[in-house]
Length: 250
Length: 138
Image (cartoon, rainbow over all chains, first blue to last red):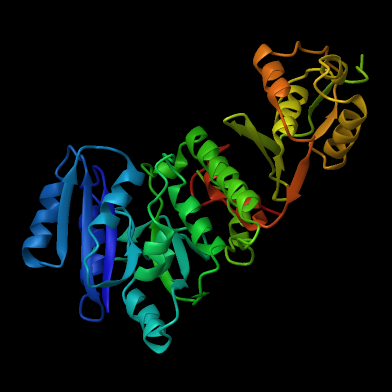
């Protein structure tokens, strides 16, 4: 089953190589198609991607003027192949753990009606860029958070849900996941660690004011959807990051 | 001196935004979120910015019994509390929003997204103590 992984990237020359290598190491156990959308990078991001793509034709690089992460994700959706059966996402500064896809792909093979696996993520403050695993002296915590990389989405589901909502500058992933779960899709929640989420000073989600309003926008849109269609599911019992309450973030 | 019909947002855990005139309120301590009818959005925005209930009643846009019930619900939900401050004037744009409203005064509470709202790492931004090195003592 062809799995297309969409990676938007903007000026991440220091991280994008490791992110791509974390996917390529899984190419023997998953039929991978890697769609990189370079969203107007002005550093050497494209050169790093091209260098890896020259050795790995499953990497397809597309470049566009900078338009923000939401538009870049949509550009990725437009590049899905006719034979793409499954879709996932990896951000350019995160790492896909070894065996992550294999662990969840088997669920789709066993159950043709399955449309989504929604797994866990490990937040970590230091990754070893050689082993692509958390560094020995790192701090980490594993939760079922809100992250597109936690999911492997059936193509049928992706086609039904449609594009990311370009009203969002951020929290487009929260909005997308709410729409997915509200739709009543058939999903399971494996314990697979689907993502090492790298915390570093450039993380977009650490800006204070913009994400808050965008998060509120996602809730507002969810309320409007429920008002228009009361048959939509309530999104309960999926996300579980209670453990994060124990921690204080930068 | 406490004003009998002036209110303020009840605590720092009550946060809100407005999109196209529609208010969304979160209670970060409980994870509940609150949605409003069109008139409810306007009244919430007025009351939470210190416009007095009396000034709202005087507009004639809202029946005063309905307003009293609505305020009682906002107090019950812990979204508003009586304030000690002098009232602020009703902004003109809110007045026109209230005049144009078609729905009855409604506030609805939801708790299905509490898992997201109570602990959202995006919003834990108050103090630059480093991540995730500091575990809070309970």
